[in-house]
Image (cartoon, rainbow, N blue to C red; front, top):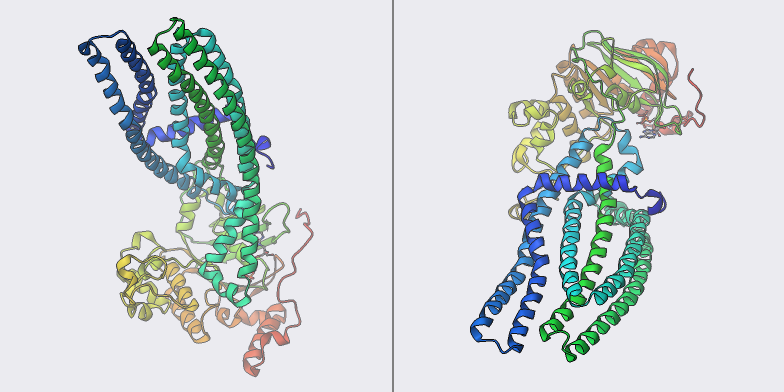
Length: 634
Ligand SMILES: Nc1ncnc2c1ncn2[C@@H]1O[C@H](COP(=O)(O)OP(=O)(O)OP(=O)(O)O)[C@@H](O)[C@H]1O
């Protein structure tokens, strides 16, 4: 991946990418593309028509022709002039239209492909994220660029053919010399383009770094810490260093390009000068007419420009295709979670969810996170999962939602392996609030409604979910109630001056809103709450648990909390330690057993009773040790 040469796709792949790019442009804007092709052909033929018309006019004048006879070429010249003046603008207009249509189509298609990824694995792969960024950049521009390059090659070939034909008529030797002088131009341009493509790939990491620091320096979330720790200058320095590195690489290629172009420019000028000298001499000797001199003076630079343009278009097209390859690669990406060709319908949960000897790690190079977990969450029960930081609780939840598959062992829904279902259908039966829940810059109502899109406009359901999470009163009193925008970022111009719009919630209020989002799915068979009350005060937490217990009676829930008091009423408590289940039972049973749970519970209860900080009494590590070995589970 270090050089473009190493990562450059071969010719066959470039052909595939070219077909994909032109196919996309054709699908998105067929009529505009036809118009663009027509305008390109016209644009290429106009200078040739103009040169021949000038020749006819000059020869007519030199021969002392009648005014009436000269009117026809003069009129033609004027028409060609009008066309030459309007065609480029028309082409530019149509091109912009094509670009917008292709960009929209590419964006839609790219995000459809990303949305179709059912698991999380790809989103944690930096190479995939890199590709996605490049694909996003390339997707909108490249189809039109590729088509433009193809049209540019057509334009160049037509111009070249027309003027070369004219030159051959006048002086075949000169035509050959001009053509030959174009060979180094073509080779030089291609060499520079290859270097530029290599450079663009190589500066990718530096550009990503620069973007990362830029986003950090302008993000609301980071602003507090950056100011508190005074690290703005430090981060800015790193951002500029990344930019200087990329700029140095760009400048090196610019210098090379300048040297090549200066050399080629001199060569072209010498050939053109020699051509004009020959024409003047030939005209003096009566071998060609005055019109012939004018035609030659137009044809030599035109052939040279067409050759250089051709080389340029080929180089640009090549570069665009290299970029578009990332887009095609993302579109072709295989899902990391295999989806059954004939997924079974997900039945209502009657028996329960079961993990059977589940082993999981985030990658072969990572340590095992779950090590042979066997656990049943009986239908209709509330199970509480307890464990130190890093024990694997959130990972277990991700497996239940089939965001990953276990490496060994199985997760069963009423006895059927989750892999037999379509993940989307399975997830429709699950409601969850994750530890790192989302805060959407949308209205309050939409923030809840996203929990079940079909109920997005059902105000009574949304309000019920908000009541359950204790947020209804707060939301009802917002300036525009549930329609209030929970953002200071996305406001319309009119809203900007209205102090009533764009409300910022507190951390705990956002958490309640996230809970309401999952409560909206009251039809879900399984409700999973990962640290649902970490940001809530003790009173609020107690109140939510009581409401939830009444509301979810008879439903299946899995709760994770570090506040053991909140889990006390669960039907079953499970202790996870370093990826293994070490204790299971009711609160009373575990207290009697006197194991880890009893010790942690006593620690927390004692802390509350004595008013001593819990951590001061902790003798065990507060996070689970990260296993450095990767024992073979078999
Ligand atoms: N996406 C990931 N890639 C690699 N490792 C991960 C990933 N997510 C979690 N881990 C690792 O897996 C282990 C278990 O993490 P997990 O989030 O499941 O713990 P947890 O019990 O929920 O902890 P906490 O109580 O702090 O939320 C940790 O060592 C963590 O570093």
